[in-house]
Image 1 (cartoon, rainbow, N blue to C red):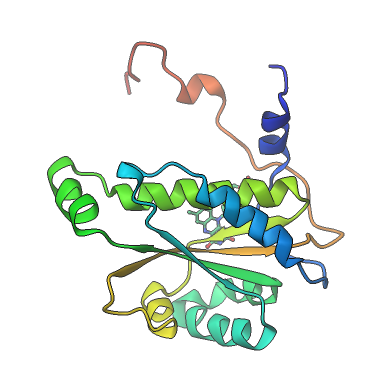
Image 2: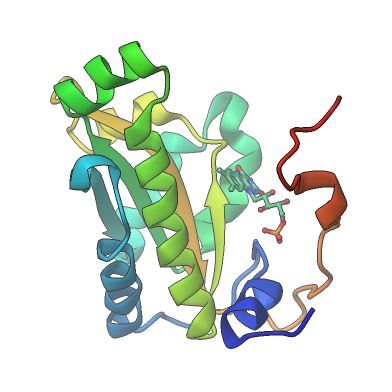
Length: 188
Ligand SMILES: Cc1cc2nc3c(=O)[nH]c(=O)nc-3n(C[C@H](O)[C@H](O)[C@H](O)COP(=O)(O)O)c2cc1C
């Protein structure tokens, strides 16, 4: 299949878990956030909120709060120069009502789309990222002072320039024949 510039970017992106000791320019993060802002969302609710930590002290406190206990294996991400907290502002109608009737939590889908816009914009600028699902979401909301205020924690995103010796090997992907079904659903 021919590579388009976008497909090239998708191919080149990796989850990065070790970072160079180099600060990330805020303009680059702002560009990622602008890309996220442009993402589609259910009923255009734009439920995503991005809380960006690049202050070393504040970031360390955040990491201490969310990478503890059973989440301690994620402590390596404390070394990322930037940690983005992705939360959603829950909307009663879209999230609770439509979700309950139709069965999909659309605001989580929205957050995933917005977050991946951020991640791909980061990759385009030479930044490494890693989605982090293994963290204490309740502790995150408490730490941010958002508990009981209608927010839901979705994920963290570590951001930074990749360490020089970081592996560029691609993790295996299913081939197209396993995931694409023209006109007929999978039979098993
Ligand atoms: C929603 C989500 C949560 C993830 N959580 C973690 C995590 O907690 N720790 C981690 O090391 N990687 C995490 N990852 C990264 C995946 O392991 C990674 O995307 C996958 O193995 C494919 O590798 P690649 O991103 O380098 O292509 C997460 C990815 C996604 C999309």
